[in-house]
Image (cartoon, rainbow, N blue to C red; front, side, top):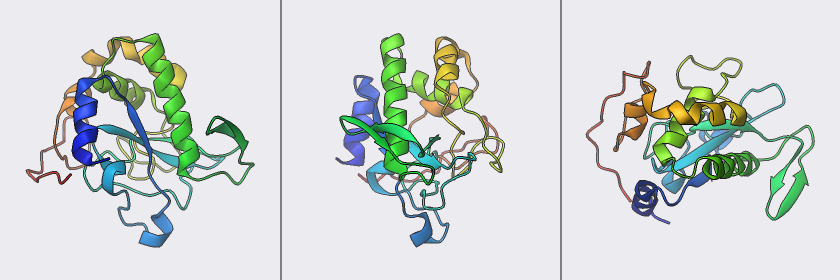
Length: 195
């Protein structure tokens, strides 16, 4: 799947794609390590958290190769989680970012089911504004945990008012962005997206 196809599918609002951030952080020594289609602005990329709400050491860090807000959000990787066509017990040590992506996929399905007319930007804003900050994360956006810990109940509550959020223009924009220090601080890079 190419980055261009992911962006086109996202703009149709008929498809919502979730991706795992990947497990390359230790290999890359903490440098940005979310690459290829996992870092495309049209997808929802998730990082992995441990039982204390901290990023798993292996969970890839952003900003993404193609889009700064990667990972977009973070989810736990321990305990019994949706996996394939069933469930898997990852125990206290946790699974990889694929297990956190399964939780994000379930959350996106629930949000789509409850609000079928919501577009993908609405979903991004609801997830970002409802996310809970994790221990040691930066105030607005963190390269390891994105906007924070996935909060499905909060996203359900936030979705009806998503278009009135100050984040809406930022997350509705197309193209690469530098990581902002505040919702209004993003600036286009003027780079070309490869894909």
